[in-house]
Length: 317
Ligand code: NAD
Ligand code: AKB
Image (tube, rainbow, N blue to C red):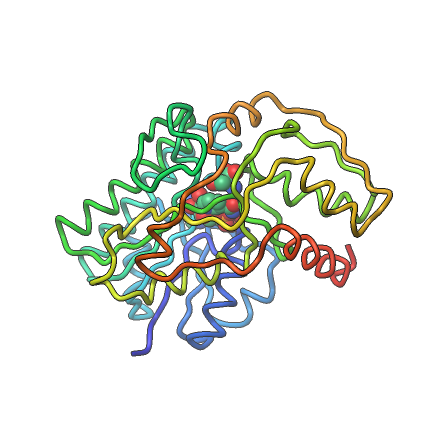
């Protein structure tokens, strides 16, 4: 069956690559890209339909859905953890208001919806190692509050209204196409740019701080696999734990040093982002995603580092 897919927030770190991935899979004209601003990402804007769309405007979402006969929304528009602590009201309005608006349109028009949650939906009282799928979630950030509430809202729209909602809890995503949009895991992307340009990096996350991470090709694969999964096999529809690797900055630095021998890693810890990282898990248990829809990542840290450095150098960084 052919799909008509709308992506919100498509010019961010995930959307830049997910839009192109979806266009390769479902055809350029069947994938409608949208964002609140028209950033300079010609590949996305020129390869298929693009709409300026603010997700806090429910009427505008419905109009775009009607205009293109959309049947699926990949809802990416959000404010990430670090920016969310600087602008909690904005984070609440976009993350909660935007998701509510998308779900309401989905309810009225019978759409399938994918929404990413995050390791940020967990808090300091969550078990830190091999964090289970179903566990305590008492996050201490506005981002985390909106992510837990969003998970519950997606469950509610499925059980109460039958909306086909699906989602994962992404770890920190590492990619070379677009820079991250203001999160706590961003150090694991910035380090590559500085390693290539300066052969050194000062990490804002402290030595010994473990967080889950994933290379973008695996994240794109996760979205496609979950959206196409047999609904009868999904016990958890939303907020599946998914992960590919867990490391702390020294381990990432040591892996980069294998390719750039004079690379040096120092620390200039940012207390705000460090406090957020300290409240997040060290490593997730993603066995439910593996069992219910066959999730398995391809990239470990060594494979990701090699590919990131090759791709960024090929881009002329
Ligand atoms: P990003 O910050 O890179 O991009 C978000 C995009 O949303 C931006 O292009 C921005 O212009 C747009 N946007 C902001 N306000 C908007 C509005 N009112 N209407 C429409 N668009 C708006 O974020 P991302 O990293 O691509 O994340 C996408 C989703 O994935 C978010 O829900 C995020 O919480 C989740 N997630 C991301 C990561 C990660 O590491 N990147 C990890 C876990 C979860
Ligand atoms: C962030 O650090 O805010 C994101 C995330 C893990 O949700 N990268």
